[in-house]
Length: 181
Image (cartoon, rainbow, N blue to C red; front, side, top):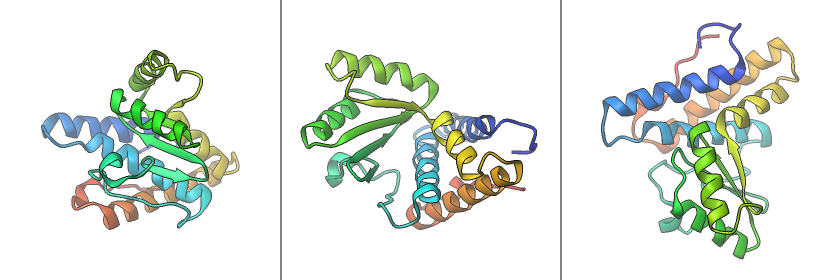
């Protein structure tokens, strides 16, 4: 995040790309998934206010913990994943059966996979699938009231909140984002 001339979506993409590169260099570590989950959580906290839903460590499984998704807000269960598979579609089916609205937030590569899997499960018109860069970037524009200074503030606020979430819910402080405004 070096230049304010770069698009907001590019800033989000760069965070994810850096996490994916770290993951490739440390087999067995799921940096990209953790960054996605906590970035979405930070964005939601900044948009809705802190304390309106629960955060968990990245390694906490929805199914094992009995959670409806990574985040549950109102009647919406959000599932944040870098690699949507049959398991997340099954969780979405459970959400629908329980009267909730499932949303999958994933990478650009994951959107197609999630849509195909949802369609194959007969749920294509029942699950919303969003690409994470757009999901976060558009909200940063809105939080910043579509003004340059507002965007800088919104990005700083989301990064600050992200780092707080990592500090509170993860054991690996290297997941934190360094940000210079």
